[in-house]
Image (cartoon, rainbow over all chains, first blue to last red; front, top):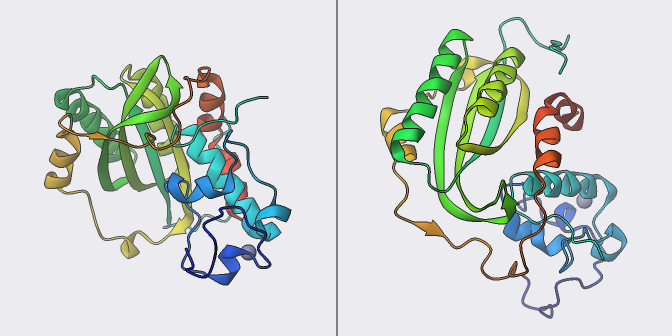
Length: 79
Length: 169
Ligand SMILES: [Zn+2]
């Protein structure tokens, strides 16, 4: 987390987090990180809100699906 | 599941996989040793090699799996050909203590010499020695009531190994 940012998790970012910092790895084994990209109810947040580029959004969505498969993350709760 | 070998496979190269298995929370060290032995036997016969095995402890599951709210996570990394994964998945379906498994292709074309490591006796023992600690995984958030059992979805994806290949490209 950057210090100059409010602790809001879903602030509108201009650039993709993963393009900006290539040390941040998208890994289904790291649910703590992936949690920033799903809502309270476990639904994936659209890239237009998180600012994630299309390519990284695809890897994110794959990682989240895998993470759910091994019960590291919950499936989305239907409204 | 179609046992197709990709044309991309180099003759002497192998595929690198990782697999997560979730065991029922009451699984004993002895059970885990038996599972290890069966997997290692299979790898011997199918010319695969177990690179690493980790036990991530008994964790709270994000949702109930076969009525279990906790499970013991084992993380495997191995080399082999596609046939081996199919065999390992078949074995996992047969072992009652395994409540969920997922294997993932990490690299479709690995020179085995570039992965000289092999699981050690110590790693195997560590992976079998558990039970004493619980990992408080989801305590900060997921306090909502248990969700429906997603077993079917899990098995479908776990069996869909070939679709993982496409995602890699
Ligand atoms: Zn990006």
